[in-house]
Length: 353
Image (cartoon, rainbow, N blue to C red; front, side, top):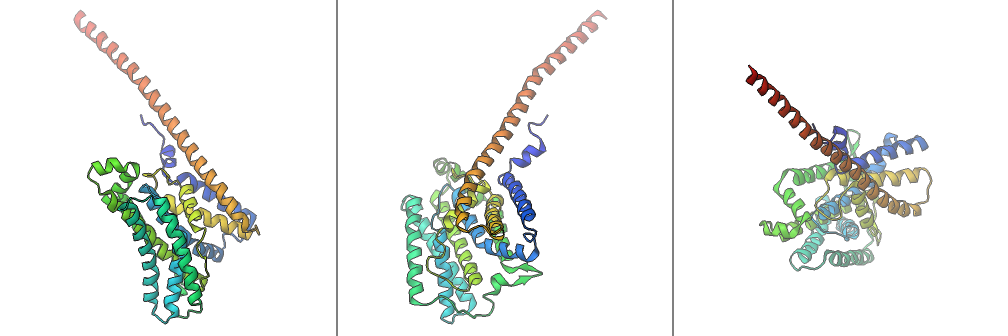
């Protein structure tokens, strides 16, 4: 007898409850505005949401490893700025992309080094680099207007398409697949979950905790860098203070998707669903003429709802599993007693013979 039903096992998957909420949200917005699922509209809002989804993925990797990264938003903004600055100077597209991604990776390595090897609290470190990245973008925008790029292929990173699918979708899809393989199929992923659950126990077991911490922040920074390149491509111009507040949305997406802030729990799918849910929510509110100011309020409420909903679903599943296990354990002695009665009766019959 199995302790849980197939439905319970499916609902126990991280991110699956919010997947159902995402589907319900799409249905509601489609009913309110039939244009919502129009092909062009869907392509636009996914393209707009991909940078946030990539930042959410980076934050999720850090959180799974037991840390937090508050700098991803402004690092993405600065990466967008350095990309535009490089291209405005006449550099080729590859150089601009490399500088943008390298900016994010550099900040990730700095965060990781200070947290892992200097043993400074990750909240303090990333709060500091958040402000440093924001300040550097302001300085950069004063040195050179970050707009007017006409490098061939740059705009096509987000505005082009392949087989009718936005190009940025393939870029983000490849990164999500790589992250999924890394977390689910490699020893790095297994050790990362172990460190998130207990860094001390992992250290005793011989896991290099500082190396893994450095890796998580580097991955988060690199993903923020890619997000910044895509932001620059989509917007065509980078303003000072771009990216401020994105860290809140990214952490919200991770939490809503089912990433445990305690560390050691979560998945790439959960990060994807959380980021896509916020992008869907933003697009739906925009199409229904809701003031963008209310999006932050709705996002905050969505965080609370997502955490409570995920927790309640897991509690119901756990309670049902415990109930089935209790029934199974109470039935087991009865079966054993019945078998002993039958055996004793058969023995007495043999003796009579």
